[in-house]
Length: 243
Ligand code: NAP
Image (tube, rainbow, N blue to C red):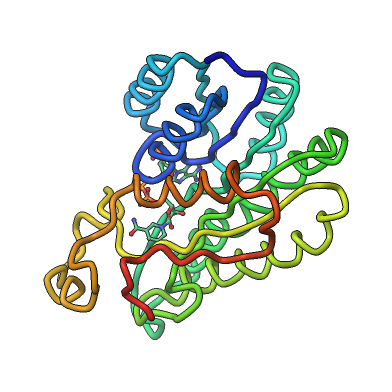
């Protein structure tokens, strides 16, 4: 099962990122995850990945901090030599109505969910260009396509990631690097556990359930590993919430 190929998932310790890490491990990839602060969750995910017969390493750094990202990605590249799959997944919410949204809420979400992709992807793409191979999947959201009241910061960041995805797909296709995005709907993770009105959302979802992290991981693996001629796409995985 041991493979030469490496997949790097930001925010890979919990929720959707953890499911992506496990799914890519099942596909034979050695896994590198990043996380912000919850070392217990990261260690548990590393152990669960190793149990699948591939290697797993966790790096703690803040993806919104350019210096930390540069230092840690340089270390990751030095240790693991290559990165075949990058999943830009780390993200946060700090919801508020726009009229009440302060600059701190705006900047923290834009920095963590959007600027992080700029910081992380730059050194990884340099490596992928040398490899003449790579697949990048950016974790957007359906609200980045359709908007959502109370989430102007988050929707703006996710819409930005979609523009980033399409532009990089056009720039990097000739280097054999594919760039796609997944836009999840309403997924059961720590991020959504305190949401109110869950019953109201469920009425709007044709599949009549929240998505699981594994539902999203399947789509990420499809775009990153199974597909070969798909680039610049945004795959909505939302149980039919927006049709
Ligand atoms: P989650 O359960 O809260 O997990 C977030 C992950 O990101 C954790 O591993 C966390 O690390 C990491 N993280 C957060 N801030 C970070 C930072 N500054 N630097 C490095 N890592 C950081 O969230 P989730 O629901 O799985 O969401 C994952 C992605 O999917 C996000 O981009 C989110 O916007 C997107 N998404 C989620 C939903 C949904 O319904 N859940 C829907 C659409 C899109 P720690 O464990 O150390 O905190």
